[in-house]
Structures are given as C-alpha cells and as structure tokens.
Length: 338
Image (cartoon, rainbow, N blue to C red):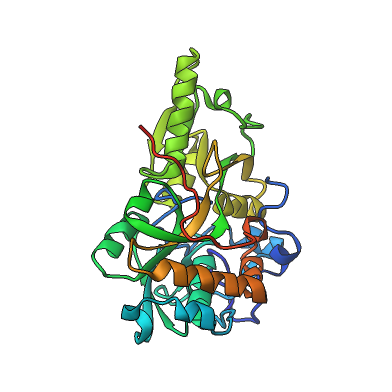
C-alpha cells in the first residue's frame, strides 16, 4: 500500500516523495529535539488530499526497501570490544510525526529519516538494526538502563547532555515558528517579535530554553511576557493552533515545513532559527558516555556521506537543506543554562 504521509490510500504503486525531491520541504522556509512533536503516530490525518495534490507521497508500508551503504572496515575497527561480536544494535526512535519518524501502515514499524539514518550506521558497521519505539522524553532512560545501544530521535547536542552521553552528528538543527496561514504574524526573527504571544513548545527541549531566554530578554526590556503552553504530542499542538488557543508553535522546522508544504492554506512558517541559538547546534545519534560507540558511529556516518547514501536518505525525506558535510564526534553543543 502507498499512502500519503499521515493518511491511508487505496493500493497503488509506490512513489518516494517525488515532489519533495524536486522541491525540498525546507526550501525558502529558511529540527531540534522535541517532546511537543513526540509520541504521536501520524495515522489518520485530514491532510491527505492536500498532501496528494502536493505530490508528497511515500512508501509507508512496513516493507521499506531502505537505502543502504556498504560495510566500512575503518568504522568496524573502531567498535569497542564489547560490540565486535554483537550481531544487532538496538536503537530507540520516537515514532511521532513525518518526516522524521512515524509508524508504517502496520501501525508498529517505525519509518522515516531517523530510522534510515540508523540503517546506514548499521550497514557500515556490519550490524543488523532493531528499532525500539520510545516516547521522546524516555530516550535518556533507555540509554542509561541499557535497554538500547543508541538513540536516534532528533536529539540536539548540548553541553549538559554531553556529561552523560556521547554523540555522532548527522543533521543541522533547525527550528521553525509555525502559525496559521491567516495569522497576522508575518515574521519572527528576534525576541521582540514574540512579545505578548501564546507559544506552544515542548517541555525539556532546546526550543523551550530558547523561548524562555527570549522571554527574559523581552521582560528586561519592558515588553509583554510570552504565555508558554506545553503539549505532549503534535496532534494536540496543531489542534490548539487551528482553534486559536495558541498563536504559534515553536519546534523542529522539518515537521513545520512539511505541514506548510502539504497544506499551505492552513499553515505558514514565519521564521527559522538554529537550535543552538545564539550559536549553532547539530542533531546527533546519542550513545552512553564512554562506551566507545560514538567513534564508530561517526566513522560509519562519514562513510555514508562519502559514498552518497547519506545524501539519498535526506533527499528521500526532503531534508537536503539540513545536510552536514562531515559527521563529528561530540561536536560543540548548546551551552548550559544557569
């Protein structure tokens, strides 16, 4: 079965984001870890007709025919001894919303950009990948408990997280301000632009830290404070936006831009921001600190970058504008907040 992301369709031939390849999700619209965009499977959406008109169709069956890379002797040699003879790596993903990760038609198989990145890492390391679907907020516990070997779930590198986890970067972190198409908001580029607004954000996320920092700047300047609304999943956030309960949602630009692309009459992105503001940050695969996997993961990703399979994965999901030139082990992260 082929269905537009977020909706079921009658049986038909598979087309892999044909329009998104020609016109990336992020083009002209100028992602970070988010629990506001987490935990919500993408099934049963009213965006089906709009998405079909936009040509954003993707193979959403459990049989993904994923993009693969070859084994990398260099990456395999970097595996710690404890993993040399292990056949399978267990990776947690948060199957919440397209195009990052969501559930296939069988309602149990996670698919999307994050699962495809995990596949490339597994291929390069000569390992099978077993996906564990976890709520986004649960990825730290999953790693600490040993339930999974890695988490690939739109996680931003931060200096605080680096105290407990190691990282291998694979995407630029971009955030987007999503609002209704009929909103009077035209542009959000600086703190003053959000003064007095009601903004939805995910608790414990980097976008929350940025939002609160902007709000503090506004209050120090005598501007109206922001009203912050917290939501547990993307569906509730969008309902609040459509009903006028919130003015804008602040989260990963990949998901925001997707909504705009498939339903431009309902939504618009009025600004983007790097998730490391005022610096830059990257999205990365997370592993338990000191277990030795991050070096092997970084080499595996660079192998995929070099042979072009990495670019094909991002192109498949319309995320070309978030591509990196080289994976880094534990790159500079979002600074700690006092």
